[in-house]
Amino acid sequence: MTIDETDRTLLTLLRENARASTAELARRLGLSRTTVQSRIERLERRGIIAGYGVRLSDDYERGLVKAHVLITAMPKLAQRVEAELRRIMEVRTLHSVSGSFDMIAIVVAPSISELDLLIDRIGALDGVERTMSSIILSTRIDR
Image (cartoon, rainbow, N blue to C red; front, side, top):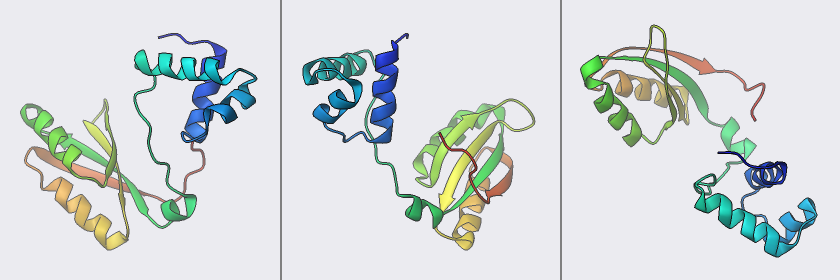
């Protein structure tokens, strides 16, 4: 799907603050409110904007322990593992990857002890052969 530079800028502004008013977006883009509203509606219809979400504060995020959990799944049970991981709310992101592991889950927990329990829970899922985890110490770039 191709979009023009104005739509890319509009998407950047919405990623910064999805609750920005149409008037504010129009002012920042140098367009009329009607034009901005039409562009947003078109982006939604085309499926480029799939929804809106909540971005948590840096202070709240800093209080969480984050980790990458590399997962090897039995091939015949990989879809079941994915379905089970979808049900675990602490799994923020799940990637399918090439290499010696099949998936990488980005997980969060309020403490190291709860992270330990979460990793054990993932490892105990039917179809998971093994896991390896790395705790994220800091985030250097987040776009």
